[in-house]
Length: 446
Image 1: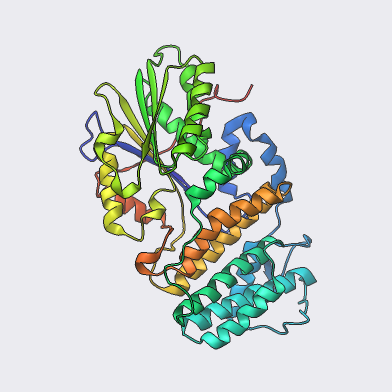
Image 2: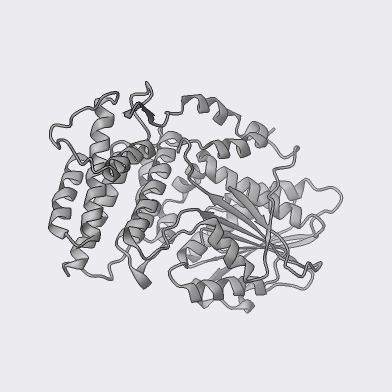
């Protein structure tokens, strides 16, 4: 889904608007969701190659006369496999045999094995939720034995969730430090920046959020000659290249100054990104200034941003809010702080899943289906770059899984919420929803 929050309830001329992009999972193919293709098809030559891949989608399982069958595709997606495993759990159909795995009617041996693995993991999670730790540990050992982080998407998901669930059991029994340090995404980004940049260029959902987000900003600053962009997680900065190209092509209202203020904790990484963007702006003859704010998010002050009176401010929040959901008071302070910058537009990119719930099994099911969809996507788009895929999974998405399984209360690191939650939340700041626009027809590859 894609949304844009526009204006305040007072509807004044200086009203702030928020462009909100939420990547969601539907009952469609997890690798290339239909809704995603509807958006991508509007971007002309940039994504035409993706439409050709749509015909290769693996089908979801079908139920005929009470019998579950798959399409002729020998390997089902991770989401399909996990859906079947949950159906069997709900029907009290536990596993038939762990070793060897038995193939069921209409299901290939490989899919049957994967369904059993998913089922064992779900039963282990249920046993953990009622504090039957011994039984859960026995089941999790089976998951780790038969799955692998170097295997198919479903087996990678099972491996990561099983390992973190075992660690959670150790926590409950006091075997390890509750304050263990998770992988730091910002540190990893500095180490593997070229990897993340390559992945951004190959993942359709990343392209969707970048192109639509940049178009929302271009529309909002169409009459501005001095533009100030504030990015609270700039990563590689490749998304700003899209916007720079759009600004450089303006004829009626040429840009007098484009300023980008990047917030982060790594001075070296921000400076490298700044040099890259400065070089690109120079190639376009675009007046450009890059500023850095070296600070933790909870230590920010308005004076750090040097906003001039004649500048039109736009804010870009990429997966910033999910890191604050564990601390509601801090989340409100942060958004309140952002609004004080008086931006004309705030672009927010988040993933949609309700992992922000105190009920463990609800959180577990939301997280595992989200992970299955993501791993299917990564497997389809990065099939030729398995090393890149592995790095992305183990640095970024592993944190998401660990936050869901091993984190509780104040200790949770990264959580996600549904679109309705964000609508209600932003409404408290006098911000309401508006439709996102597609890219301008002339904004395409040569």
